[in-house]
Length: 360
Image (cartoon, rainbow, N blue to C red; front, side, top):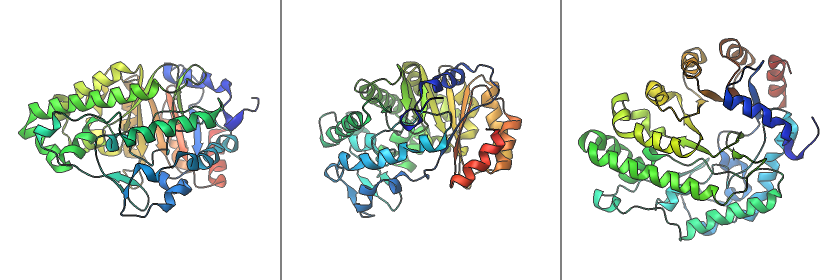
């Protein structure tokens, strides 16, 4: 394959198309990441943000992030894998949508987290994302800076935003949001529907501003290209939902979002596997992305969940760190069609060890 900036050769598109179509292939789509779990550590401007302080728009100067974004993109040249590389503002280090909904962003040692607002029902009826304030201006400024820096060499994408259940937990409080599902199910369902519309309209507004890449769309967090509109859906707060409550209050919301983005995929952790059957009932959901969480269940235990996704006819994207033996287990037990492995590696020696298992 001929050289292209950051390894972004158009010849890689066929692999993505096969992934989405779940075509019969000899091996899964595979990529490597040398970056860690905590994006804040990757950007030098973030080191000036003192832990415990509140992040303000004026503290974010997008031009100062570009050098680190370009440095991260260079792993595409280094890894020589199946994936394209792209960027989004701050690469998951900044929770934009919560800030747009009025949440204070608290700087931690390794991350930036939004604080709960604990709003009353009366206030929540009017909640909207602020399309004219400082946070939106800073967000669009960051996108524009990345588009200029790209110069068609890499795709610019949406950010990994919190989904409706996560926003519900922030706006009402994590504990109260769970009580809402049983004490005020009609109000909770209506709020989740409202937050689903906010989430989807925000994503659509972002995509209306971004150029396509190789006539397609892109999710930078997972290096995932698609031939049509893509959306990463996250519902981490559902770790505390029962299947009955998920189906009653949230399933229809996630269904409506998936219907608006033909290549919608859902990000999941092991803590939400008890909802897997209910999630798989959402027919427009094309793909499930499951993290191999640090300190999570053994791989053998997760294997049955991976297989259920594949047996349901959905594409499966697994992201995490694996030993050579664990990677061998994945290759032995899972079908290669519709499978993408995004492997987090500690160093180049670890990468080469995994490459040998892949026979590459």
